[in-house]
Structure formats: C-alpha cells, structure tokens
Image (cartoon, rainbow, N blue to C red; front, side, top):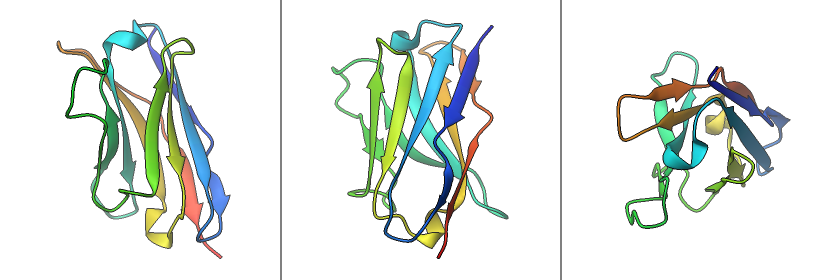
Length: 120
C-alpha cells in the first residue's frame, strides 16, 4: 500500500523556521522524483520545490520564485523521506503543504497534507 505521510507543520511566527518531512512507503522511493506543493485558502495548488530521483538531472532541485533562497528541499533515500526546510517564513507562506511522488511512468502519488501557519 502506497503511503506518503507529511509531518512537521504548525504555527510559527514570521521570520521563523520549520522543517517538513514526508515519509514514503509502498514503492521504490529512490526511483521517484519528489515534490512539495502548497495550497492556500481560495488559491490553486502550486509547486514549491522539486528534487529528482538522481543527481544527474541538472534541472533539479528547483524552486518557486517566491521561496528561492529561503526553502531547501532534500531527500534521504535510506530513510525513504523527503524534507522541506523552510526559513525566514512569511505570512504568505501559510498553506497546506503536500508531498508528491512521481515516476517516469504513470505512477503519481500524493500525501494528505500538513498545515503551516505563519502568524504573530
């Protein structure tokens, strides 16, 4: 059974940091590109960051312009986990953050999301 379980969300003050984790199971994690998306109330889901399955893909990692220099995506294939380190958080980063796993084929999996709220 495929599972993507996000954790690490919560309430943080502007300027603070959070690290999100996405633990994967039920598929060969190292063969999948991994991505973080977010969806704020009333807005469409948007890509935040992505990382390839191998280090040979020079298009990865990539980031939305709004988070470049503040967020870092990384993965630990030994732990089947992808991370999103979020620094210098802003109120506009408030959203539900989702993890996505995508193969070179048709396989495409999503997690249930974790809430991040940036507020004083």
